[in-house]
Amino acid sequence: MIARLLGDPNYPTYQVFVAIFISALLTGVLMPFFIKFMKSGGIGQQIRADGPQRHLVKQGTPTMGGLIMLIGVVITCIVMAPRSPDLLCAIVAMLVTGSLGLLDDIESVAHKRSLGLTPSQKMLGLVTISVAFCLGAVNWVGIPPIVRFPGGFTVDLGVLTTTLGEGPGAFRIPWLYVIFVFFLMAGLSNAVNLTDGLDGLAGGTVLVAMLGMAMVAFRYDELSLAIFSASIAGSCIGFLWHNCYPASIFMGDTGSLALGAAFAACAVLTKTEVTSLVMGGLFVAEALSVIIQVASFKLTGKRVFLMAPIHHHFERLGWSENKVVIRFWIISAAFVALGFALYFQLR
Image 1 (tube, helix red, strand yellow):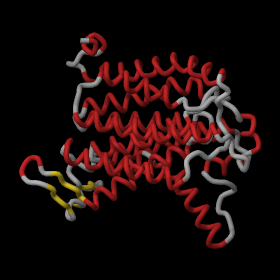
Image 2: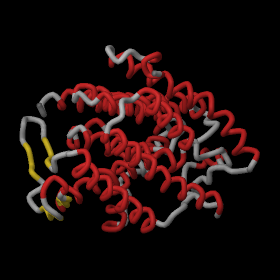
Image 3: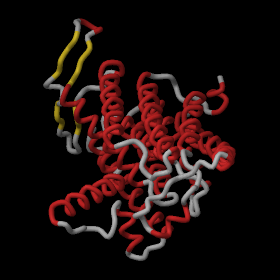
Image 4: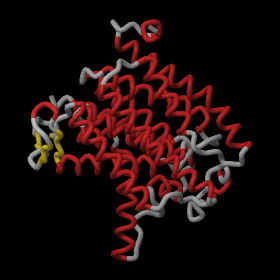
């Protein structure tokens, strides 16, 4: 009934835009109360000691703003989105990954250090989440274990499948596709997490990426996923009001890991795994810069970048924080446009 009042089901595009508005409003209005609560408890972000020196002034800035973002997304989806298995699958993947990020943030704040959970603990959590999501997507939602490339080329990753039981209730484990989804979800979650290093950077780049994913889901005839993606974009708008330079709050791993997982989940559920890597090209570049930096230093003892992730490299070159953020937003939008164009080559 509420959904009918806010967005006529006969006009699904209207519903998507209303979802953006509601999520942005909820996140923007609730965030000041959360900031006040965090400040009263003296709960703030721990800054890397080896990072840019001008970032040290951000020490103690309230964090875990991603919690309010996720609340805004969930409420918006409850109000606006049609109920469907793929929507529930995407929401659960986002919330569980956000819970992992929340544990990481709490660990960081409790021990007054920039690092929270150990890499092995984080990876174990991501393995569990991605495997559970993949099996749910395949067996409950009915997602085929194939990967589509632009130009019509398709790879079947269900060739090595273990089937438990018989008939309609059989449970399938497509081993190759499970591994692929793990790399996609864990990779994008960590990539967004690495991108979250400057005021407004992760929020703005996720905003344009999820707007692109909303368009893909809409074209894929998945209104619930389009509203889900749009609500994430809306939450980024509400968050950016408080996270733009100088930031009053950070999203923390609670937000960055969850948003990366949500993006990956939508890619799997719309069968756009490959083009999503193009749409999220900025996140991929951030992650690759870290991989290249670490590999180069271990193999040759030399660094390729002045500092990794790559947004810090440009800071070291003398770019202002705002210049890096805005130019990275532009690059992210270009990647989204390219990915959306390539999407039409899948059909």
